[in-house]
Image (cartoon, rainbow, N blue to C red):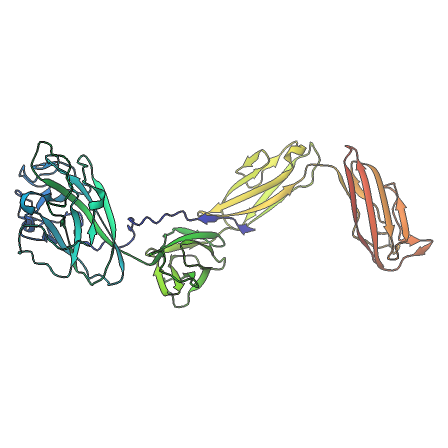
Length: 491
């Protein structure tokens, strides 16, 4: 019958989670090196892509170092395993005389007016007398790295000072924030931007009289105005609900419409197929019906398109669309108590089967229920699955001998076939059949199932016509029946 698979794509778009996009930061975890560090300072000599943002001297730590000062995990500032890989950087956020250290990196030029998500992990050195709240990120198009050793007085584009002094030293603290680019920035510097007069410090404890942080796993991702979660395998004829997110929340106008489009089997959108639409300017779910008449392929692409303003976002990964099996369920019904119920399912594919029903389950394509009882009455659902795609069909089984009815037509023409109209039934105790012509005259009546109507009224055969009937009955178990309908006389 029809594919039953309904795929709910469960996805929460966290604003700090852009793992499916491209990280714009080269060497984000400081893994790539010119050479193993042989001590502190000389950051530029050791770490690839990154450099000191001023004449201050940040440090590079790597597991390959032979120097006790720059080893991983233990070094001059404490003991810490990298958040990922074998390396991390380190810098001073607070020291006398406003001395600060910065690590900087160049990135592909940002697009003015676009949003970006910055994140990094940091950990306070074990041997520090203070924790501080001066760290931030300054984006630049150019930077003078030879200017001085002291604090950069520019206001950072991203500040983490509202987090308070960052005191975690046993593990890593995750920090993230959003940048709305107002220029085509081509680099950024991480370091301390609060002066000694404005910085917040934890109370002094024995240790080095400054605050020093390890930095690892730095990322910068472009935030698209809209996107949806990548899916996996889909089935023809199935329904999916695609959650989508927009950023910022008020970017799209009230009359905007989103639609989901499917590419051809090569991933091209020359003549896309519209799978679903929704009129809204807020994030939500788009119901999408996968057509049944597609060509199975693992190279489909999906995109979401908006109308006001016009934008689109294309899935990074290919989507595979598979054929759903067809299935037809049949069975013996009605049956009397004590008889057997025969169920059968046929499918167009080699598939696995799963039957469910009242207190019943089976993995056989044609299961048998012996010695049926009224408790077996109900819907029996068979599900067939092939290549992770499923379809189902439903069969209603009745276990009851209380059966009664009259034919919808008969042919009283004297040929010996179907000349007499009888009431048909099982386990009937009492019956009352009345037949009326189109003028409302009672043309036949009986209380005996063995007595039928020959199509005559007052010794005259009735013309070809439709007559009405009223049928009432009482079954042996006390149940009653009442019905009305039409019977056609065929001459």
